[in-house]
Length: 418
Image (cartoon, rainbow, N blue to C red; front, side, top):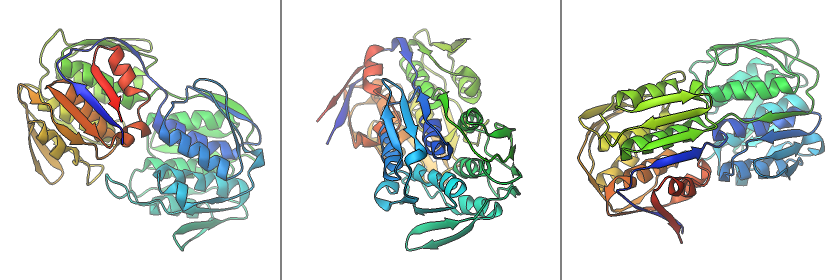
């Protein structure tokens, strides 16, 4: 099994290109099922989850092509199955996002219930209720969500709680529903906006994406389009935190600073000097130790839960005491025990972690527990004395494109073995 080995102590300096967003490209790939022609996607990151989604689309009968570096084409006109099997869905919860498109386009869909998730339950009932409000008949039988509708009809739906995935599923389904749909208490993440922009390029009539109220006027069909995937704000934030922790100076390119306000504000609180120029963000710590920051994760535009683990790693070596409140997922402190192995001082009480910064961490063997935890352990290894070996890095390949090569380009001593 592959591992990542990090030799700590080198400040990061240089320039790194940010890839397309994992959390945007997966729903957009599912949305291609709605089109009546070829969809060409650009700035697609080379990630395990992208390959899994492509396999799922191919399983449904779509023709998925490689258009060169960062380019994927999907021809959905050959789709001949409306069943998403457990073998593929179990490896990636985002697979449930084919439910809305299949239902809207073909009138029925069978999608296996996703398997368990390491960072907590992500109930699909929000997806089901949203689609039922559009007139779908849905049952859960033998581990499958079975949905039917002769024709979806526009309706007003209010989500009980904010859910990115459920917002995406209902938004996609509503594009081909008859009449107007209003989605209230909608998720406002930049990835929702990117999905909406792709759907609009296909001919959908959508307003309000990026706000808590999205209005969709249904159309009869969606057509071929081209779309470039938005920059990954979580990857961008991860590299900026790495620069801050190591006291370095790093410029990230092809980024979207306007999607990262909460993260950039916390980096400034930590003592970083930031300069945003178009799609470039330069962070300079001038060799200083970061200052501890307090964080409460919230739906966008609040602080993203996907950056919590990375900022916990920063707090581990920061000057002062930082308090982290995790309000999104109930089981997202599993990286704490691994950070403790590196010498961190962390106390956890329920959904709150109190992190007291130490001058230096010590390298040790650790094990990744989920995608963002993997990144936090790499960041901690960058500033630890000696060698840190991170096992179970398959989590990492789900959401970071060539992270060890990118970090090596900034001066990190990091390699993959096994």
